[in-house]
Length: 421
Ligand SMILES: O=C(O)C(=O)C[C@]1(C(=O)O)C=C[C@@H](O)C=C1
Image (cartoon, rainbow, N blue to C red; front, top):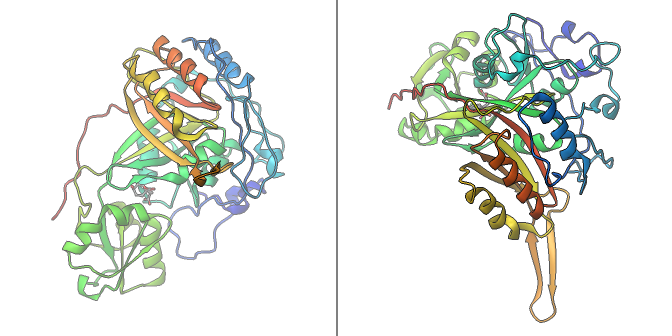
């Protein structure tokens, strides 16, 4: 398998590039650094979203037609871009990069398989994930798109860009974990990029403590892993008597790879059993997550939205803000409550374009309010009239609103991980 590297986006021949590590197992990762502007569009009141593909796409265009505000949360980029909600990315021109082909490929039409969270077609879909082989994200990519080609990326940002630049067809990225909470970086990137959520996948995460062959727990002075994995195993490490330094690295399997590559005899990694196998490490302890209900939720991202349906459970993800901060939150929530629509998740993030609102009061002084952007997932499809009406109402209260995606819920049967403690 080949690897994508930082210069992949500048080169037409990313497949020939290999990262410098001599000890790398499997592909090196796709990496790149850059940032670009945001688009924010406001939902146009009164235009419902139909259930056919044409309705959905024209609704997306309508949603984008009334741009209320633009925002840029990238401090390094002064450009503002306003695009259709489902418009093609202009990342290539923004980045002044050369795509994988000499000229950008024309948009591919949606096919029936795009409706499925896990297409079962023969052609090999290229699915970007963050991490190295053996990472949970790789497993999530395989669960979301069986028989796909998994493309490792060294950063979440790179996974987004690889889809925008047609290097990958989809990205599968973690957004929250049942023990560790939200992966905030990906919430911020969902807003900054123009990809659509087309599905979700929930992965039970079963952690192991890995070390070089012959190493015992008593020899350890460090445990390294992804910060989420460290937090998911915090109590168990203490119970195992491992009150040693804990260090965060980019991903769990990367930690295992690092130990193997550098022959670290005083360091263990928290990672999967597959990472142990790939990098030649021993499993010192199995099932070290603090709770068997350790599940990470990943979203599947594509350049085009899917057609929302009503014949199976759907979820819709939105993001919004208001010029007067949190005061609208109650009104927004009631738009869903009145229509009996359950919310499955609320997340708030700093409003990077305007992080503080200052209110002067002559007698009392100056109040400095923090400003937020809100993300909500709700339990309905955009093909349902009640969801369309709820969003039309939400639009009345918000200065920008964007539908990140309306997609099938992951309804696979539940099997908690076992723990060894
Ligand atoms: O490091 C990995 O293996 C990942 O896939 C990343 C990640 C995360 O970002 O939360 C994914 C699942 C687990 O929750 C731990 C880490």
